[in-house]
Structures are given as structure tokens and as C-alpha cells.
Length: 337
Ligand code: PBG
Image (cartoon, rainbow, N blue to C red; front, side):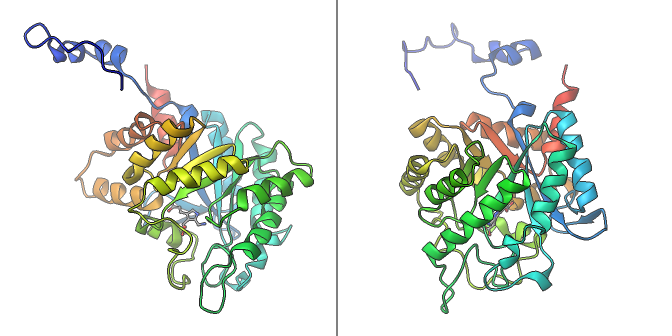
């Protein structure tokens, strides 16, 4: 922050003057959420039931292919720029290698191509990580002790990313935190002719308990053996986030993400200030769940708290927010005068 002259004291200075009316508040407001800042997070499944409610995330669903297409069209008509798609994979298709992730006729390629066709003007972002597909719930390949293997995992992620690009993904988003995967995925995409497919890197992703409801939503919760602390970051670290983000940018990330969101806004601010690149925050499942639980109990006013939470990401320096609330927020923003 720039410091200018020492402020004149009261009574010459009355801070409340700029707050006295709605128009003054609007005129002096520094940051604001717009529909252009929203990335819809959504989960898809391969069954026929159009919407399967996710118990720990009231108001969110696992969408069927048909319903996912309808949601993409709705997002497009509301002006939401991008959708992040996450799969719920049939447990019978999971194994140690996550091989269903490489099935060209699998759920993700199928749904993504259908969404792309039906709603060509909304960006589609796909997750690059094996956890929805592995029976052990880890983001990559593991050794006998359960530790994720770095380099073999990278090779798998490159295959997965290229397959997603072939299906029509505009942005691939590696959410796994192995070292070196951004450069390898960039090279793999380029070699396959996908120079224009962008990479949003989950660059500073923490080993957080706030992901609990998501693992519920994609069905990996019971499956997860151990934890993800050997690849995701320690919540106590801040300088390490700067190193992680710097490496991913050097390897070719077009956009970087901090995750979780609201408890990590200090990291968002540091990353934005340090690099000045397109920076996103993921308002994760646990943040959604705790606010919705309080709203359902009447302890928080949902109509206000959801938008306030999104606005805080912008104030912290985020260029956009990945959120399960994107459609509701877009509608609400559309109501403004
Ligand atoms: C894993 C992945 C996770 C999320 C997105 N991709 C969870 C995890 O690391 O276990 C979390 C999303 C959320 O909590 O909303 N590749």
C-alpha cells in the first residue's frame, strides 16, 4: 500500500462520509465480483438419474450426462466463462492404476464433448489427477507403502491431459501436486497438436481437511488410504507457495490456482503480488458445506454471505473463483441494477 500524507484527523476527516449512501458506497468500492470471475465447479456421473444430491453439500448434485449438458447451456446463457468438470466414477471401474482415466470412451471425454457441442461459448476445464479413478484414492500411482510415485504419475497425467484435450477441454487443470507435471503436460499437449489448450495449475494446493465433502461427492472418501501430505502442501507454509507457483509458471502454466480458498486468502494475495499472473482461488467443498450448513440452520443469511465470500476473493487479488455457487451467483449478479 502506498502511504501519502499523514491523514488529517477528526473532525476534518470523517470516514463515514463515503459510506453515507448507496451511491457513495458504490462509487468508492474498490473491488467487485462480476459474472466474468466465476468458474462453476460441478460433478458428473455416468448413470441416468439426472441429479443425485450430495448430502454433505446441500444444493449440489452429481449430474447425469444429459443434465450436465443442460447445466452447460445455462452457464453459457448466464455468461459464466468456464466450467470445471469433476467425475464420479463407478467404483467397479476403479483400480490401482486408475486406468479408466485413459479410456477414450470414458465418462469425462463423453460428457465434455457433449457439453462442448451444446454450449460452445463456455470454457471447459478438466481435472488432471487420478484420484476419481484409483481404488486407493490417491492422485497418482503409489508404491507398496502408499507413497505417491512422482515420475510414473507424471507420465499417466500427460496421457490423461491429452485425452481430455482430444475430447474438447479448453483448459486442463492438474490438481495432483507432483513435481514437474506442468512442463511434461505442456510438452505432451504441444506434441499432440494442442498448443491452444491452456493449463491452470493447482500450483499451491494444501493438504487440507476442507476437501472432505468433495471426496464424498466423487466417491473417493472411504477409498482414500492414508493422506495426501507427501504431495500437497503443509497448511503452515507460505514461502513454499511462492516457490511452487514460480516453478509452475516457469514450466508453462497459463493460470495458477491457490486451494483451498477463503482460509488461504493470504496466499492468494502473496501469489498475485509476487507474479502478477492470472490467479484463481478454489472455494472448496468444505467452505461450501460449512456455509450452507449455517445457512440451513438460520445462523447465516445466505443471500448475503455467499456473495460476500466471493467478493473477498477478489479483494485478496484473485482474478476468478472456482465455486459450486457459480450459477446462483451469476443469477444474483444479473439482478443488480
Ligand atoms: C484431487 C482434487 C480434490 C479437489 C479437487 N481435485 C481433493 C483432494 O485433493 O483430495 C477438491 C475440491 C473440493 O474440495 O471442492 N485431485
